[in-house]
Image (tube, rainbow, N blue to C red; front, side, top):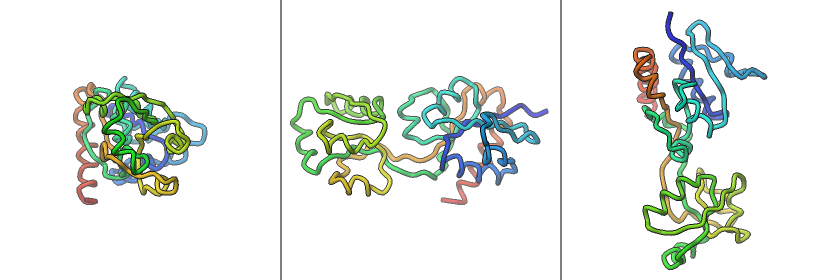
Length: 214
């Protein structure tokens, strides 16, 4: 019998798009597409298990070996900083991690010794500004981060930007781009060795699909 393969998927659009790719490999995603109150979903014919979790939890499940594979945004991986094999850019869920604020803030940053950054990515923010040799005060927010500069809580924000319409609507603009992001396929390091044949088969199958889309 083939070993059980477990996928940890970030709930929402990323999971839905991942299901389409997996179904093209012959994997039955009926249960995870319609989970109800179930926490663990199966394609029993192929011995594949799914868990649908918060995006920030995907790297944790994969790192601890509870899941062999994870599908999650690059922004989440950067923040988690866990030792996973990032094996494939799935190309969907594209966005940018950016520093944003008022247009005149860029000049102020050059002279300000310490300024405040509102973000739900404190590790990314710290690493980014450390690299620049700039001291910051991090203010963690997890919703409506654009409010930071608008109400004077922070000087800038570090957040994901898709269309930029929310920034524009609040008089803010992108000042710096930190990273380009999209959905990534990650693999547990031990699983890559102990379940190598099956893991490799799935990676190669997904890679072939992604290649046809790019």
